[in-house]
Image (cartoon, rainbow, N blue to C red; front, side, top):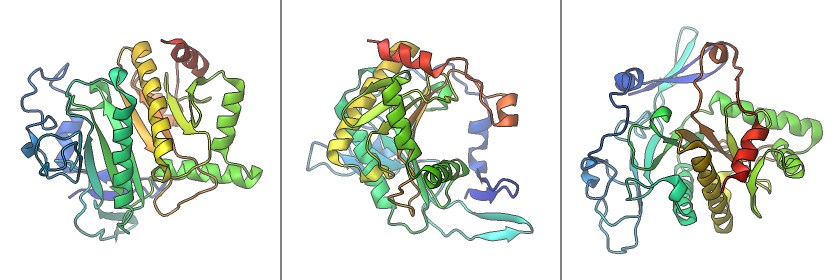
Length: 333
């Protein structure tokens, strides 16, 4: 089993998972994905290659679990970072804190189509994926051990996606990660000073200036953040305040999916289907309806590499201004 360990200097938790060692530190054996997809564990007909499904959407009401004829499947990761079984067993080792790697690690197999690309995907495709995220988050909320859930997607070899078939992941954990806590606390400090949500103010200012807006619709806005860390980093935020992703309505899911489809199509055209990571940032599970926090989607294309300066300082050097990135994306058709 994996293990959480806490850094006593800055309070950051890390996961030590020796079972994944070689797959993570050794270079990939492939410059591209294998051509033979007959053994792809995410393709229809290969359901026996995954663990038993947790959730499936199908147009066939008589479909048996773990068989073909599905539109989307959710399964436990075959090599999970965290396992749902067990107890945390919080303990100390002198000055150090540690606990067992309890949580959940799930794979959302987004489509039966192995080769589907986001640039060609429909709004219905995204809507189905986000509904699955919400269904799983709502279910995992019932586990009192869990504190935070991250739903994310790694696309492409540069983003460490080891399987080409379109899929996302969801990891539920018994801690609130340091990055998330910093974001929530930053919003709280701004609220205490100005009595307004910093995310709501950001949306309002960006819509007013338009310099970094990529696109928008009636409910959501996509923008390249003012202090973008990475080239073409893009965020999608609700125009109305909401701290919990799984609290959005069906109408909001549809609107969100429509705008996300446009954003990914623009990124695909401008960046030629570059690798990326996409992450849903939402409030910690036990801190619902926060007036100072705003859920959002972050899309980070993998165009540059983090090196010594970034690791040593926590600062990022971005060679593309967010104003230029937004202009390129906005004008792409």
